[in-house]
Length: 158
Length: 195
Picture 1 (cartoon, rainbow over the protein chains, first blue to last red):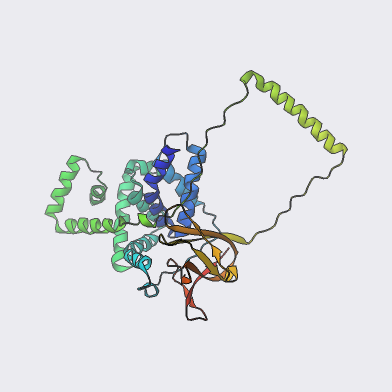
Picture 2 (picture 1 turned 135 degrees about the vertical axis):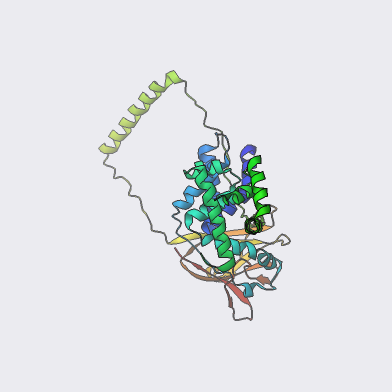
């Protein structure tokens, strides 16, 4: 169990960030993270622990997301000003939220790819295997995603 | 067309020759250099700390694979015996004309919703809201993490609620921006649950 717990602790942060970037929904990302680790433990725990496999499980779960409940509450900066330390922390993370929102404006496959590269720590080669495309294709596409994201962040346009 | 070298540089995927090529290009072309710096700045934003917003999750307990009890040569005998027993049981059921139980299924339109608040200094935490008829319902601490949580099964609808974290101190949910005034000069958080 310690082996899997270490795997969980080592990967939960970046894995959650990936799921959050992909889905744009905190609750959905949290549910998917829990389900992914549970599935991993249930089906693959006897195998060598693999970050690539974990991200594959998470991607697949998001892809056939049949979640019925979605509570989307827009973030209103003015309502949060000066309420408490927790809300101040939220303000500080607003920049991250802005980037995450920009990622949501990319095409789903682009958001997926960029989130994978940023968060997974996998090599281009591993991501190519995971997404079923060539390494060269990944290199070019990820750069285009970054340029597109830059445009969104600077101008708000896609 | 080698500007994808910037991304490869960001991800440290270049070999030494490519790195030399990249550095020379960056030094020689202002536009290329600006693009690289812009994307590196953007990458800093992408890697901004967000780990502390990672939710707490529980992972199931890993169990040892079930050990085989029967020796291989015993398996056919065991299966044969089980088959005979099953046949006798089915025969008895038919003779007695016992109606098979009809499973009762109820279409549920309620879904679980988890309330979580971070109050490491609190000795106790509770929730009150329209779903509790404004009765206090205690929340449970999640280990020593400072988090308190409570999962309630709620039907679709709009709900007002607040947390009680200390004696008489009522606070709104800091993670929910929607608020409504109550009749006592205070505020409640507002959530909408859709099935």
